[in-house]
Amino acid sequence: MSMHFRDLALQAAADGVIGAQEILELRRAGWADGKMDPEEAEALFEANDRLTEPSREWAEFFVEALTEFIVNTVEPRGYVDEFMGDELIERIKKNGRVSSLAELELLVKVMEKATSVPRRVKDFALEQIEEAVLNGDGPTRDGELSPGVINSTECALLRRMIFAAGGDRPASVSKAEAEMLFRIKDATIYESNAPEWEKLFVQGVANFLLGFGGHEPLPRERAAQLESFMNAEGAGIGSFLSRMLRSDVDNNAGAAFGSLLEMGSQGPDLDDDVAEAGKLTQAEELWLLDHIDADEELDPLEKALLAFIAEETGEDPLRG
Image 1 (cartoon, rainbow, N blue to C red):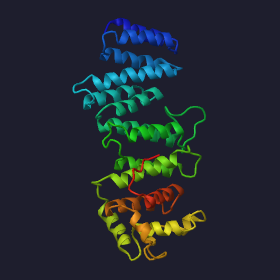
Image 2 (image 1 turned 60 degrees about the horizontal axis):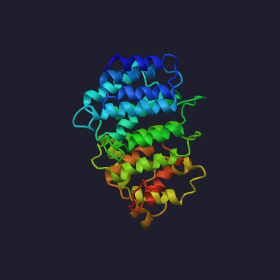
Image 3 (image 1 turned 45 degrees about the vertical axis):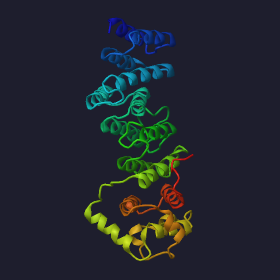
């Protein structure tokens, strides 16, 4: 790289704004030889750090250029190795956190474009969203800060991250991701969340349950407790779904359902149609019951999840 590109990038960012003409000049200078080298990539990060008003055009260029560099620099192309993944995280964390939406978008774009990325990259990106939701601060927040609320930007980013091609389970939701969805759900329940949040939660957790094999076992004591509930007469996920669907869930739901572990001998007889609808293994049932029972309340999103599972017909749960 000639010093021209770095000088051009930092000079353009000196006033805190990079205009369209300056971006065009950077495109010409950065890709004059058909590739971007590490020094040029670092110059883009430095310029981004100096911006006070990053434009949409700058964010698009920043993400496009650095994604190409990260994904296609090391052979075989499309595979982000551990070294490159660690370098990306450390560079973004240089000031202690992801400070801009452009940097977060870069992480997501790398996961979408790459065939494979290290698990640490995806974990780091997901942590940024979860922290922003819980603390009400971060690169996804603008204007009034609202901790414990998930917004539309965060929903869109989460969906893209979870189903990114380069994830540990492309187009599928992993156990860690499903558990993260439950944590966010618990932290934001009954708040004024984005309308698309319920759909993301239900589809994400259902995708994990209906399409994932090889669950890590629950702790022995907890598994035994849940299995006892599952084996009780009139229990099981089918019976639970039957009771859930037959109950007046809109009125005093907490009192109507209570702890799942106390429901083994309660409720009407098993509804065969509902029982057949739940295509879950015992390990999946135990995992689901463990998470629903954690707060001894059946909240609206959990009801929606259970209804979705009950009505599942074998088609792609992510349809629509």
